[in-house]
Length: 294
Image (cartoon, rainbow, N blue to C red):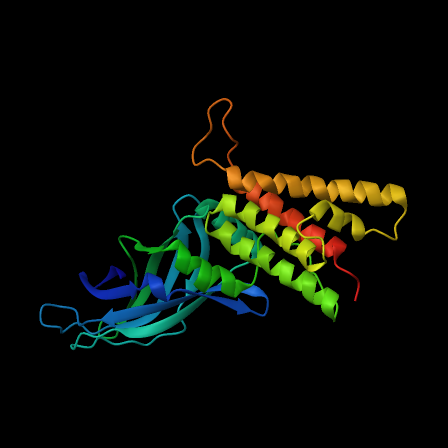
């Protein structure tokens, strides 16, 4: 649980909490959004709780240490008065994002835990003095979401990959089922990329093409499988398409040989995030290209 205090009448009597494991992703009509279930406690101010005030507005900036501020939000209109009995009431916040901000954040996260910082401010009304006051949190509501939860509860719910740029429609029937079953591994590779498992991204994509070859009766003979998909094409086109796809398939064999650290001279090459993103982008393009028309 992460929390931060705010001041009213010179005292830290307002507290905002956020449980990292309760963050969720939401899909707002195709727009990625982040759900923040904030918990708010408002206590009396003054030596004997005699200072009357009302919390009218609570707003915040969403930040990430490498990026700085990348979104802002405001809790729905409030009229919260202090309660002498300490308790936390929940106020739901939905921060609408976009593809660019998601991409920037995911690149900065680079497969690690998701680190968010919330800078909060509130607007107070003092009825006796007939005045408003704005107060800003002295620190951040610092939230670290484990990468496994971030991937499953946020990224996957958005149903949005920052590198997925095409749509693939699978035909009905056995052929469509074969392609769709193989493509499921590509979707799995998306989660592996988000989790920072770059070697496994390439390996999973390689297995997707081998599964396709198996389902079409080629027993992992991927090169022959690719060639068969262009059986009715001009020989020159068939040869070049086969070689292009086979070359990409060979690139995916980097996966099993990835090293944890930068290799010394003569050692096996490292698979980076850039490599994994490149391979995943190519896999989407290949499936769009080779999937039979509906």
